[in-house]
Length: 302
Image 1 (tube, rainbow, N blue to C red):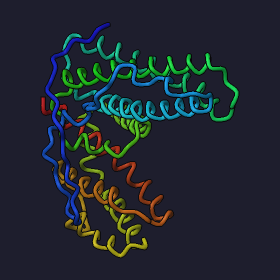
Image 2 (image 1 turned 180 degrees about the horizontal axis):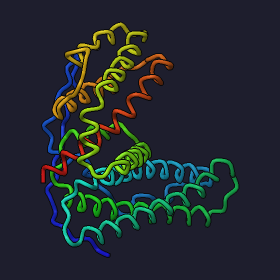
Image 3 (image 1 turned 120 degrees about the vertical axis):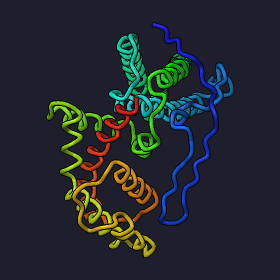
């Protein structure tokens, strides 16, 4: 099935990372975050400049590594949209279009996995026939072409059904792999299924997360205090929260808290392993609840 959605002009996005402890808010258009900007050339990958089997095998491995990088970005975009599928702007074609896209993604993953198995052999086997190497390279080119077409269709899908997602929704997934987003989606759906509807789970999170918020911040601060970098100590409890007792936070306060946590996670290193694991356990539960709140608020923007 062919997708046919209106084209949208792409623009370059420049995001400035803050130097100090106060996180910045980017003014980039949310819907532009995932758009593919690379310029592709037909038949970019070939073996014409390789004169022996070793150089051919090395070029194949380099090419598959480049493909895996692009594939990860594509699957990241797809998993992000799956995570926020409840907030999509649906029409009569949405279910059919989504089903076809799911099938294409599954086919893409299957072909990628099959090719990966073939190319992995080249790392250990030296005597591979030239004809077989040429056939592998043809499959690599086919997969790049598949990727290019699928990337375009996925961007059209995003424009059509997710035109107004907030920056906060994009930000929560920026530092996650596509597999981590997939697992987060499973955790989110499991929690939602434990309640009658999204409103009920939203209310539960709103009024029953105070202790979890305090524990998460305390664990993060403790890990930073025990690190070898004295600069991390400026991220104390008061940097994250104005009070040491939290009953509830409104939605904007949740967004502010996670903006700070994500910034600190991104810019700090050398945290003690035990403290990090302690923080991680609290954070993953809080992250799941925050995503549900984001989904709820995205749905109510329609």
